Length: 99
Image (cartoon, rainbow, N blue to C red):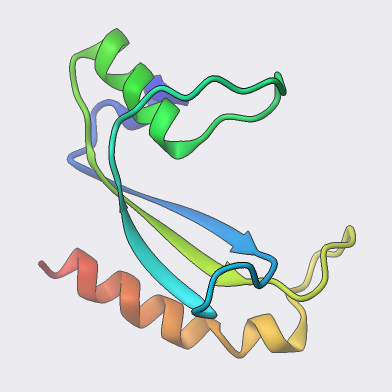
């Protein structure tokens, strides 16, 4: 994934959260910082940016768009509650892109 984002000036990571974040929709900056993980399948956005810098000499400006998820089963559709948050998430992302 580092190779895929390396050529870009800006990237946005999108994630669902379980309600542990106060806001239902949140857009936060992501800084390059390698983080060790005991799980081999777990890679944070911070670690990915760090690998991008190390391997390709570029660190895109990055943000994490986190949207409240309500159902985490194997489904193709968003829950009704999460789908209702999409317009707010899109507006936040548009605002960041227009800066």
